[in-house]
Length: 432
RNA sequence: UCCUCGGUAGCUCAAUCGGCAGAGCGUUCGGCUGUUAACCGAAGUGUUGUAGGUUCGAGUCCUGCCCGAGGAGCCA
Image 1 (cartoon, rainbow, N blue to C red):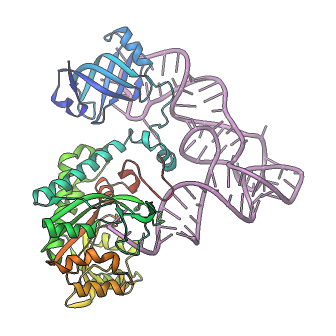
Image 2 (cartoon, rainbow, N blue to C red; image 1 turned 45 degrees about the vertical axis):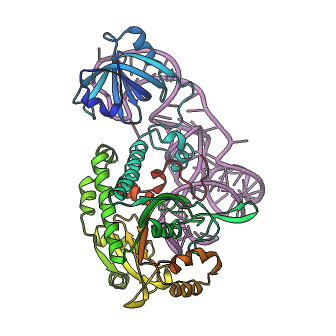
Image 3 (cartoon, rainbow, N blue to C red; image 1 turned 90 degrees about the horizontal axis):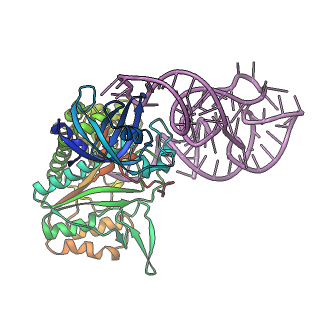
């Protein structure tokens, strides 16, 4: 008897198969039992009837409890009543582990706190499996995109001695008696690697000790960062929109069933990522927002209502570019035609998912970098290695960072970012 | 750190003006051959977050504290 995964059952109609998984749910009508079996690839309904199944098999099935693990042998049968188009007529069941205690997650509504407290079990149920399968596809699509474009996968350290942007709060740790921090960005290191390898990327964990308490923030999250030698601001934006377009289309191809289980409007998603994405200068965005009655003036950073308004106005991911230097970090290159602004852009996601990407062309001259460090009151010494990149073979270069969890939340159409990662770390959440 | 709302059975919630602590789900038992969060019948389930205060009487009103949710700021 062949071992099969639930996802591939539609191609095995009429065949005898063995499934290895867990009991998701059970419904029984006395002489007929419906067993919802899951194995991580999907859910299928197994059927047992009193007069066709062996009595001992029928009886053992009656004793099964939610989330008990089992190996099921049976024959795949096409059935239009089943959501996946097929069912399995069970011939025998090997119970691997019968749960004697009640499974803590009910297939009903529960509070976010309860579910997050039981995250290790919650991830087995409902929408959590499709979400995590979509996360897998997003991660894979990012790697595939960069691989196809000839980028080199690289790494940046997680333990660092200096802050990248100075402003953001860092997690401080003790490193053999000297202070160290958990990285809030791999960017500076990727700039160095890009000078060695040309075009590089990585997907790595990022740590921010901000006491943010919103649906868009985690204290530990994943960022896909890329850095490209000889790319200018425009090259940067072109690459970014192609990446987003690629990710979304790949996920639709590979995880259409999961998106439908989440009730995602796939046509809308497809329409949102048609190229090119709109581009608006910061200056024009301010004017647009003021025209719409929002309070904001030049030099202000966007708040949530501003992002949402821009997002709704365009109905697509939108680049806001040429932002004031005053609200941006020291490493961004000034716009030669308007030195108040920098050659940077934020990509605001549609449907209110906030900033998906932040990127910029980097300062490439030593003097300029030194003076911008001084402007931010940052000491030069810890950045000497970074300054070296401008002393030896400096070239124009650009890069960006993509927030992986926000991207997943948008693609899934789920409101809160905490469900897009197996174990979210938030201001009041370090367990499980 | 700030603002708003909340904490009652294992879970989700109700409890009118301050007057006997309730229901659904889950669980257990019984019934049902096509259920999709199955359904029907029966049973058990409480330190009302916590510490005080007001009152004949507090889940309900007042104060402090704890915890949570949403949002702000900051950001991806």
